[in-house]
Amino acid sequence: MSPFDDRPWLPSYAEGVPSDIPPVTETLVDMIADSVRRHRRAVALDFFGQTLTYDELGEAIERAAGGLRRLGVGAGDRVALVLPNCPQHVIAFYAVLRLGAIVVEHNPLYTERELRHQFEDHGATVAIVWDKVAPVVLDFPADLGVTRVVSVDLTRAMPWRTRAALRLPIAKARSSREALTSGSLARGAVDWRQVAEARRIPRSHPAPAVDDIAALQYTSGTTGRPKGAILTHRNLRANAAQGRAWVPGLAPGREVVYAVLPMFHAYGLTLCATFALSIGARLVLFPKFDPALVLRAMRTAPATFLPAVPPIYERLAKAAAERKVSLRSIRFAISGAMSLPVSTVELWERATGGLLIEGYGMTETSPVAIGNPMGPTRRPGAVGVPFPSTGIRVVDPDDPAVDRGPDEEGELLLRGPQVFSGYWNLPEETRATLLPDGWLRTGDLVRVDREGFVTIVDRRKELIITGGFNVAPSEVEEALVSHPAVAEAAVVGLPSPSGGETVAAAVVLAAGAEPDTEAIRQHARQRLAAYKVPRRIVVVDDLPRSLIGKVLRREVRERLLAAE
Image (cartoon, rainbow, N blue to C red; front, side):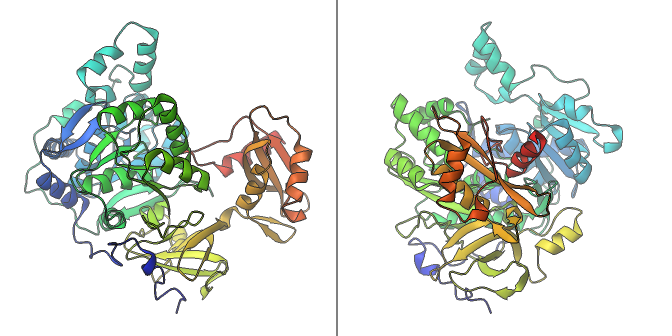
């Protein structure tokens, strides 16, 4: 029996949050159909001011499903989406699901090599791609099996005035146009309009079941090659319902959610493409995060709910202050993917008057499993408490059968309706991660206090083992950035000639600071045990990050190794 079986976190829930969500009985196809029925005339999608109502979205999904059916897409087929945020992305996502097929999301900025590896893994024969990426996918070898490439021009979903402005013969317009579209249909590609303007799928076409696979979402690959997490309709629908339950002050049909997070990432997919549309929100889509674009949208369709990451909150709050744009309409904000500094919370809440809380999750949990309460019981510094219908255990990292108690460090295990069913074509990886009784091994080391609040210590797989001791990179990074000359730091382990690893750090200096690595090391010695102090400190211009801003320690390690 786990010390946390009695769910000591329940008294900390915000008023009105249930301990459990109802059992999931509807698919994502049912969910979007229900939103269409309830909010027909409300705006569903907003792209640079061009809007689509829920009624129009429902019609677009049915037509696109009909078009994909004619391309040969059927139940169980994988369909690759390689798109930034745009209306076509949302329509394609639900059209694929309407057919009982499986969505596979991809980062459109990936290299040919990165995309090809994932296509080799999932075996999709149809790909719906950004027109700038279409030539890359069309050049895949025939043995990869991609038979249809559907090309999407984002600008066709924009207002005609915006499209006309992009065609002006001036450098700024040309640069903006080139960033958004290739301007032509690649030879051999199918125009998205042929799919989007097809005849509706017959009403009699079989719908998917709640336990059918909805999506393959590839993990970031921080510990090796990316793996395709299998997410069912039940997983994704449950997480959308959990998110809705977590914020009892939401007003269905009246919220405005900004999609600044990419929907090809698990975080953006759930918070924007499923959660937001499940409550009849107006989803304002941005192909990439640009403070100027966001602040312009705030003047015409002010946001009320903003899911993002800490750097976005900081940049947006500062830009709004400089341009004198009010953010006071944003009542709720949830941050994930990386640690949320208390200073960021204070800056954001001064700017908005609303709440900013931290959440925790991973691709394998669809993705959110833990959150700080949306109210006075929240605790900055902790990632929060388990979501409704979510259980946790803290165990010995070397033996998950041995439970740890309150305030004891151990590996976090999670269980709930949002937990995935395994990795695509990787049975051994699945068995190592998903225990027979449904508990998911997160690989994260945590402490959980007696009230159930979870604090992340570090990722077990990123721990540095030096001289037989474990070193948590985040602890060393915190010590380094406390030096006034260090703006950012990333700590990794490098192979040691004597075996094990040595601690190394890449640091970005604060503006105007002089590079004095010995002074930084001496500063760290005053705060850390000797074995934790980096043997090597390298000054760099910037740190490699994912598109949502998370520092990629694996790439830092590769760069330091290459520099040696």
